[in-house]
Amino acid sequence: KQEVTQIPAALSVPEGENLVLNCSFTDSAIYNLQWFRQDPGKGLTSLLLIQSSQREQTSGRLNASLDKSSGRSTLYIAASQPGDSATYLCAVRLYNAGNMLTFGGGTRLMVKP
Amino acid sequence: GAGVSQTPSNKVTEKGKYVELRCDPISGHTALYWYRQSLGQGPEFLIYFQGTGAADDSGLPNDRFFAVRPEGSVSTLKIQRTERGDSAMYLCASSPPGLAGAETQYFGPGTRLLVL
Image 1 (cartoon, helix red, strand yellow):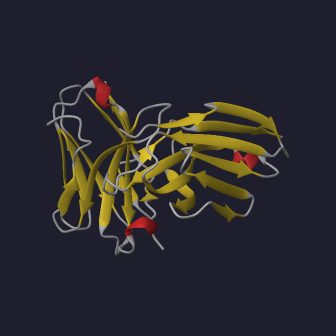
Image 2 (cartoon, rainbow over the protein chains, first blue to last red; image 1 turned 180 degrees about the vertical axis):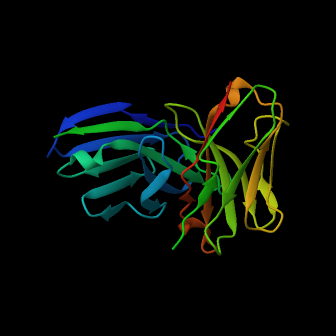
Image 3 (cartoon, chains in turn purple, red; image 1 turned 60 degrees about the vertical axis):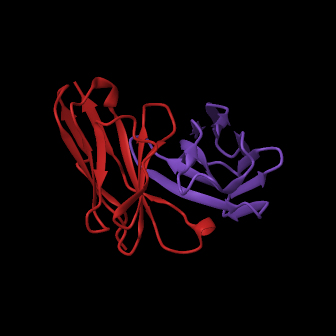
């Protein structure tokens, strides 16, 4: 069974810092990996999707990398802002598990002004 | 354009009651998913529809949970004899037809269910 782990569970940083969120997964036979943002009490917003054949994706201040062989992905946030405060979730889709996503527990990020 | 919508946004019920949660996917999206998210945890898969049929219901926790999508658009998640442990955020997502590996799931705002 695929397990997805996110470290750290919570992170508090001052505004302007560059930061890295980590995601690891146990089954490397993934179809793709997605990073989502979730604001308190809200649904999920997709940030970046990396196909299994890709190594990284970038969108603005966000960069996500994927290393299938080691079962790891990182989300890099440059020049963090208070508006980045949210929970960040990674999710993987396996080749042999239909279209379901398996999520990590999330990292709760707080960026202090 | 309109995103995925879910109603109600909040639902409070008593133990043992029946509840229905509704999801309206993005127009033209053929796939629809239900997930359940407990406080402080990531979402867990419940069921996936492709068109009108349930392609994968392996995540439904027991036979008190059932979902339908009779016309291939709106879906209803039904929970019978609710228990306090059913309290969670129920999230719906949809995705467009296309290359399987490229599909992004678009999530709705969720329905927060509280069973007293």
